Image 1 (cartoon, rainbow, N blue to C red):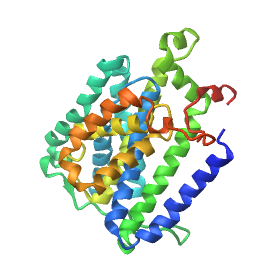
Image 2 (image 1 turned 135 degrees about the horizontal axis):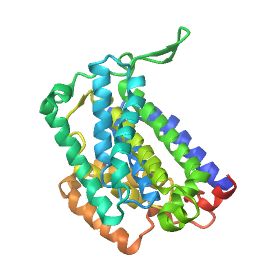
Image 3 (image 1 turned 90 degrees about the vertical axis):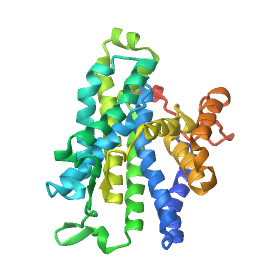
Image 4 (image 1 turned 90 degrees about the horizontal axis):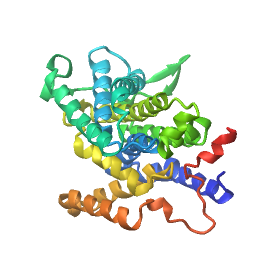
Length: 333
């Protein structure tokens, strides 16, 4: 379990993220936007991490972000759904698509699954471009409305984003999604089902021999992963008020994978650390942007050689963060 120092560190981080930073950056929309983007990219990358957790190399998360983005855009512009209904439905749409795709492809392992998943993002892009009657083709779907108000018994629970500072509103929405996602992920991997997921990574044949339904577990994990991708895609569509076939591309899927590697595949909070470190570095060092693919490649090689367990494997004495995915805890869950 997390020790006292870990809990204090998490508490301080939440105070800084939810109170200090919004207060300091309230009149700086660019910096708010950067942090908002990093938060939602972390949510999408969390889905990639979960797929790695069951022993599959996922390079196709961009496909499900695009599916979620288009699902939300169509629900909001063509069917008149509120964003607050469209976003979870977009996640569910991405999850359902992943179930249909995942049943056959999740039987593959290693580089075979990786190559198939890599092709999914391009397939999604081409599909969005081809079905013009639904997706508007290359023109994309534009003029998507901002999230509206949510009222309960006459009390405004969430204000209409068009009536407030939308940069600050999206920042807090992204922060809530980030916190909820990783709280759920931490609980998931430290539960009984998390232990079963981990058994798939270690030895599927052994898990199957003791009665574990490995096919069903693989699909469940992949569906959760894709749900997070769909939620992230819906968020970006609402924030940018548009979606195009090229909104998520193959390089985005590769970046999502790299974020999880950089943070640490063995740690639940690895995607947060990897995403914030890498994304913020490039955002604030604009001169490096043209060399981004080269630097990403160098980082990947360096990680494999010198830091295979990611940044979170660099631990200070006495500061065990309690974030390592440890299925042994789940035996009594």
